[in-house]
Image 1 (cartoon, rainbow, N blue to C red):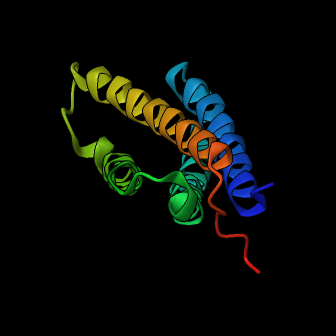
Image 2 (image 1 turned 135 degrees about the vertical axis):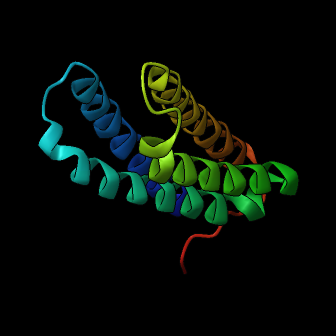
Length: 128
């Protein structure tokens, strides 16, 4: 079992779920005081995504895909940190939707990367 990849994958899943629930609460006008918590968990989400990519890299067999996951983490972080300053006004819902879609894509990339690493016969980084 590729323990480090699995641990990072579980952290991506957990933080992703929390972020989606909080984001939906914000969209409906609830729990707006938790936006700073959402941002902090978002940082953890991106760090977990990067950790998963780093741990899976030796086994995933696709350096381009691993690089895409790292770059996608940058996109998630950038959009998350700047979204409140983009398309201010009545069109801001577009940025909110884009933020959600980019984050969901990150979850999908993380799942695919973990699956590739776990299917491989090459050992992933296990921290030993």
